[in-house]
Amino acid sequence: MEKFVIRGGRPLVGEVTIGGAKNAAVAILPATILAGGVCVIDNLPNISDVAVSVRILAELGASVRMLSKTAMEIDTTHLRPEPVSDELCRQMRASYYFLGALLGRFGYASVAMPGGCNLGTRPIDQHLKAFREMGAENSVEGGYINLSTVNGVQEAHIFFDTVSVGATINAILAAACANGTVVLENVAKEPHVVDVANFLNTCGADIRGAGTDVIKIRGTKNLHGCEYSIIPDQIEAGTYMVGAALTGGNVLIRNVTPKHLEPITDKLERAGASVEEYDDAVRVWRSGEIQPVNIKTAPHPGFPTDMQSLMGVLLCRAAGTSIITESVWESRFRYVEELQRMGANIQVNGKVAVFEGVPELQAAPVRATDLRAGAAMIMAALAASGVTEIEDIEHIDRGYEDIVEKLTALGADIRRVEFVQSAGINQVG
Image 1 (cartoon, rainbow, N blue to C red):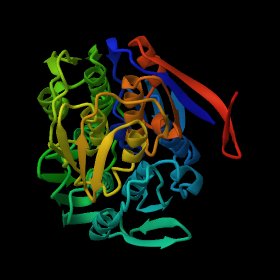
Image 2: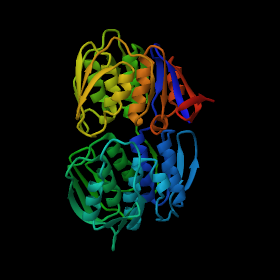
Image 3: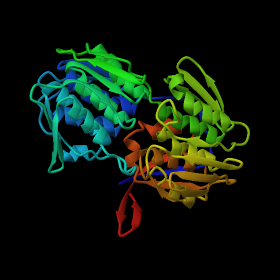
């Protein structure tokens, strides 16, 4: 097992380059199935969720070849519509995108129930609703979701009951090769939804309206391979933005799309940070006190739920009272107990958390309760006095590439340490 050991109290200063968007990559990799040919995907993040997606493609018969650290050639010409294993699906939530991709190309899919972070109830009912309305029968047997059609995916007009990124993308994947036109309403508008649509259009699909309230997909047969570069990761960028503000540092964050960061930038500026935007970079610094801010998470273009734990850490140090309301996931505040171990003053009531700022955070043994909470623990440790140890860091590796190297280059004192856990006693190896 591994953990992070962090000595806090050092401001983050320097430059960091952001990798490709995790949430786009884990959808675009399954989307290569629809191309039925050779795709070259660039700006892929070096994270475990991408590695799992690639393993699934390989087990289905795709030929995969690394071209560089960030570029990969994927040939899905001879891919087979075999069941996607439980072992791999348990490791990531986004494994459900193989449902839409396999259904779209073959009219059949069998994928084990997805895993990923425990953020409370995360039903896939809207995914299944979309598949049914496109003519697919579905069943759940032995922990596998099975989809099948008689004559392929059919035209449909689908109105989602709730805004869901996963259901929107899965419906796009299934509909790309449909027999007719599929219209999707009440859809998610996140940048990675647009990125998936742009990738498929580069492969010859006809998808219009991504990023708006209505998406129209005219089914296109015989999609082809292409070369495509994934958008930068707005949440990784936001993480380093918070780190600069929290530690009183000064960080230039490269390879970003500033427009995608606007909800984060707005809250950071309200909290007393300064943000300077460039064409493909932002600089963040703070010289005064952290100011209290109220935040309510919401689908794009609202404040992203993936950033709320990170902003929560910042608000632990604010000069006053802040309130965060979580409107997306019911268990997003599981990280609060870990911050309380570090001296944070936070009260949670259902989907609302009240943060009373404290003069400082103290080092303590903590754990990563999920991917973004894990990143928040790292930021808290960087700002705390003393040495903090963070366990369960496999969650963090799902979404952050080279995080030790990147933070070290910014002046942080962080190490990845192997240890053996035995009878409740951690023995460093």
